[in-house]
Structure formats: C-alpha cells, structure tokens
Length: 142
Image (cartoon, rainbow, N blue to C red; front, side, top):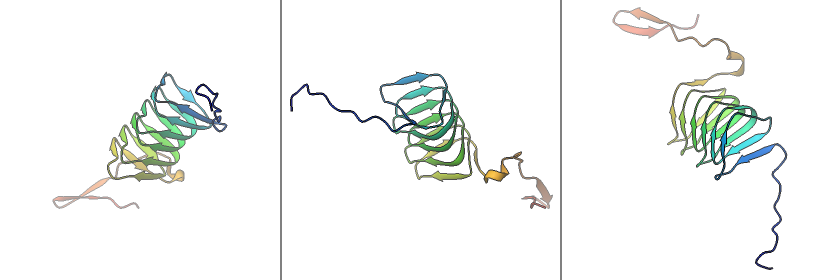
C-alpha cells in the first residue's frame, strides 16, 4: 500500500444526507429521506423521514419529520409524526410535539411538550378549573 493510494469511499445510502462537522447551511431543507446534522444549520427542515442531530450538531429553525433524534442542540419547534428522542446530551429550546416522546436523563427541553395520539391533532385546550372551596381542581372530561 502506498502513501498516496486512492481510497475507495462508500456512497451514502439513497435518500440519506449528512451535514458534516465542517459544513454550515443557511436555508431551508426539504427531503423525504433521512438527514443527519453534525454541523450547523440555520433554517427549517421539512418533510424529512428521519432527522438525527449529532452531539456537535446545531439547528436554528423548526423541524418537521416522521422521527427526530436529538443529541445536539435545536433552537426551534419540533413536530414529529411518529416519535422524538431527546438524548442525554440534547438541548432543545422550543416546543416539542409528537405521539411518542423519549426523554433521556440529562436531556433538556426549554419549551412546551405535547405528547398526543395521532387522532388527537385537533385544537389543544387548557384544562378548565373549577373552584371548590379554597382549592382549584381540574375539571374532569365530560
């Protein structure tokens, strides 16, 4: 093997895009495939199948995908059709909405969490409070 021998690089699987640690993207991304962010992205991610934000990855913008796995940082809202996983190194500054949420110990979310079944995607209402004596009790669904 020589010092300057050519390396053979395996191509990424079809529909799999990577924002490497050396890459900065400014603008929105729309994909129906998987997207991994290890660098920095300022813009929204739309219609992705799976979005993975690596430990050093940063997204400043909203994310809409089927599944989102966060080990890095997101400054924006996340809406997932299936699930969101917030790993122990993750930092999310925005609202999170999905039918399934996995929050690992140490993961941080500064925002509203909304875990709802797929059929419940209607209007979200705060529970009504009924005053009973000195205590406020949430009203039971009727």
